[in-house]
Image 1: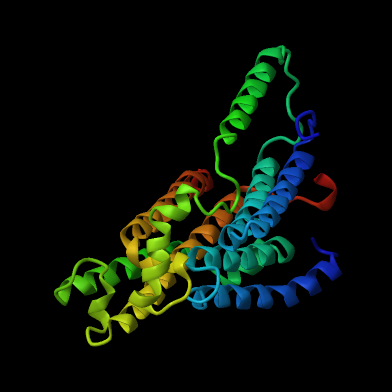
Image 2: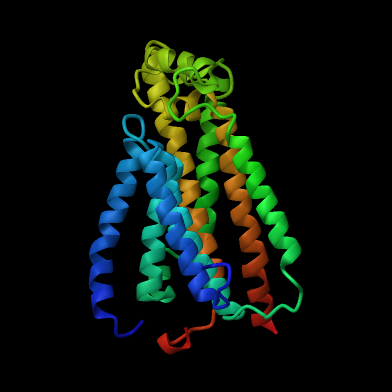
Length: 161
Length: 146
């Protein structure tokens, strides 16, 4: 339905609802960390930011005169390819999948001995891969700085004139 | 949102609960799912909710723009300083054994809490600052204009 809607308010609300549903999907698949993030960022913050953007711009999408046959074919083709790609994947929770056999089991066995904390995800993120997480934090700060420079700066200049 | 009494009452109640849950996710991240990033977005969501319902001016009385923008850098600074702390005491960068050389496990624990706090601070205030940047440019709209 979101494909044919022209009212952007409804599209934003539908994408927020979709985020919330996918957060529940993450809970079902035992990825609670990801579900937290999806519910707070996907359904919460980004919906608010999209609404703020819509309030700044327009409410209704422009009518297009172009035919939509070619995009539709491309989208269907990519979808078929993606589904074809999943056929080679191991079953969900399979014990012999590469994720279980390679590094994962090592981390599961050494994290508690090294740090004495039961949450392996936190152990990997903050200690074994601490350098990567520092980089990610800098990326978050840089993204925020970019938005502040782009949006707040213009407002200040307009205010002076 | 001048006349939404129910929304305002519920928001006043919920903001405290959301921030409390965010702090739980932050400081209990070693034992339960969650960590700095998740806690940051949850706490930021509480401030954004307050801003939507009570108005941008009221949330900026609690959390001024300058504070959100400057505090975002403090988190990265805390993280990086934890790393340099290890270097000063003769260990590798971000090797938390430096914090408590006699008990490496305790050192790891303190180090993880410190860097997760750094991540949480940065994410919280970056999200709030981004929200301020967007909402500050939006003209004030009545309910009918949506």
